[in-house]
Image (tube, rainbow, N blue to C red):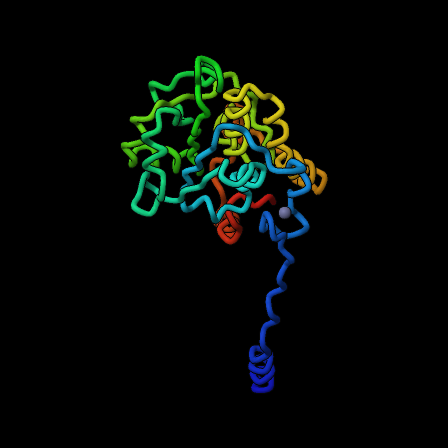
Length: 254
Ligand SMILES: [Zn+2]
């Protein structure tokens, strides 16, 4: 018995192997094996309007995020990101000026939001380039940002109508027609600029990623709404599974 204890002690004293560092892409910061950079436009796009991403801090920790695809697909200065739960905050340099600009619009389905395609396209009726604000986070996080930032409700808000189902097939969308930040930005920008090709170019990394993940065994997810309607959405998760799920980063494809 003593020998056994000794053996265990010796075993437990063996230093653990250093964690294997997976090589990361310097651009998208994802492990090189799942980098989506080959799907980016050949050179960053330069539309006349700008995208302003207001990002919930928790969004940064997500495993699969689409905002960086937007940032890297657009030329520097054409996509700005501000992080926080309330906007504009003290540290958000330049954001107050953007809020005060009459060309600033918010993409958010508030009760008075008008369909985005009813806005003048850039150049029509002297319409200047837009500052298009997107809220980046899960749906409840976006809602929380909106309710705790009164300045947002003073902005002209608009919504996308008749949007296709998300092409982001890997991540389960909470409702039909719920789009990722990249898709919302790409579709809205191509409508406002009246340049449909902008959308396809910007969605390149998402298409690349989805194709890669599907080819490597990920299951296409239907929206939660669809699964609940079909009564196939699991209502209860066993204790053991819940524990396993907790150890995985959010949105990990299993
Ligand atoms: Zn990359």
